[in-house]
Image 1 (cartoon, rainbow, N blue to C red):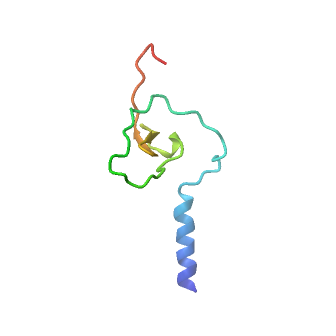
Image 2 (image 1 turned 180 degrees about the vertical axis):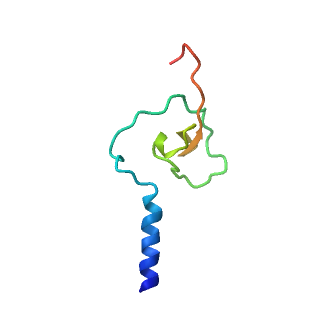
Image 3 (image 1 turned 90 degrees about the vertical axis):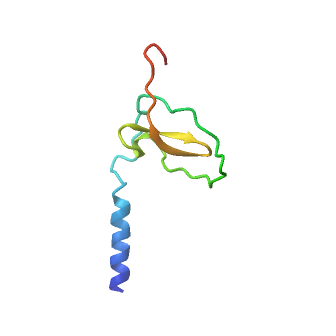
Length: 82
């Protein structure tokens, strides 16, 4: 029973690293744009590795890549373009 309790506690703590008291607040997208995505040539299973830009590192955005979303390096927006 102790091992099960320790395992469950560890599982909860590991998941807690990704939780924030502000998860219900809508945050604007990070500046920059996503690079052109490439279709899934290897027919790998589709998976969303992120749900929004703030699931990614500071210099990455959550972008559609093939049939899922993943964190990729931000493509800067050129001045004068929107």
